[in-house]
Image 1 (cartoon, one colour):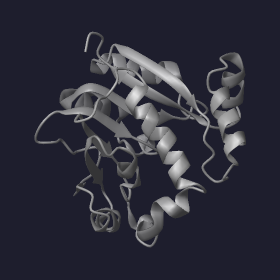
Image 2: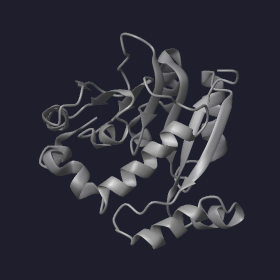
Image 3: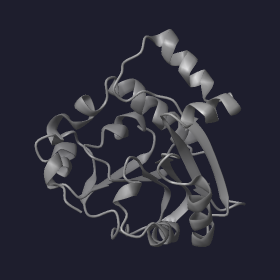
Image 4: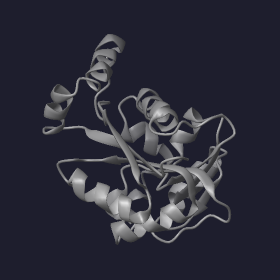
Length: 204
């Protein structure tokens, strides 16, 4: 996986990638905790393709470790005081199991998605949380791959947080409310936005 295009962007990655980085990442972090089996303070999270580890600031009660294949991103994250490993998400395995694994804006970097899910399942104790563009990847196909990897539980939630536009608080609240509107949310997903998905083993 080539990481050269991120070299010049690394220092301000989160600030430049999101119009309102704090609001966007805080909403993502809340769903990491609550979607599927809940996380609690003290749990560990492995954030694959973490970029500059901007998400870590919104998960202060978790033991956060990031992984990224860009040396510049890893350096930027470490300057933020984050624990980040230089590695490709396709190959990395932690020394110890983790409670949760996350992977955002990066599923398309997997060389072999079913093999990636199997690898993650081997070291993830509670759940895998990732985003999925339903216009790019059929949800049913991804669900079948997760089941084959051992994740028999699966829940998904529309994630209506604009990446490039900063909304006033009331407008952002309305958009988040639309995430729970069922058919209306699914209709909106045919045009833009993505799902946040949690895959897990039932009974864990």
